[in-house]
Length: 133
Ligand SMILES: [Zn+2]
Image (cartoon, rainbow, N blue to C red; front, side):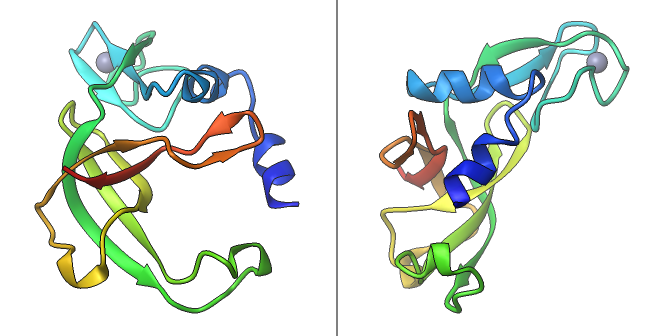
């Protein structure tokens, strides 16, 4: 159910991002006009409305904020609780709402270095999550 809901949200604006997860690549957008990166995907640059191009992120960043989810709000997540929801600031600049894996909550610190993790899949796609470096 949840997987189908997510897959139904894939459209022409986000398809390159999802297709890249099959190759374990994190794609973000780059605006050559104002030299900035952006995430989430948009049809134009959020700063200057110019055309953007896709680029592969190095997949490295810093933990900007986080929270541990302990309560089951959706039955599809009951096997995952507790899990860590994280805001990661990529080295390229954009922030991503994601999950932090491979860490116990007591070891998680704002400012810690993280890297992308594609170890969990759904359907034919891989989830973009992060783990401590
Ligand atoms: Zn721009």
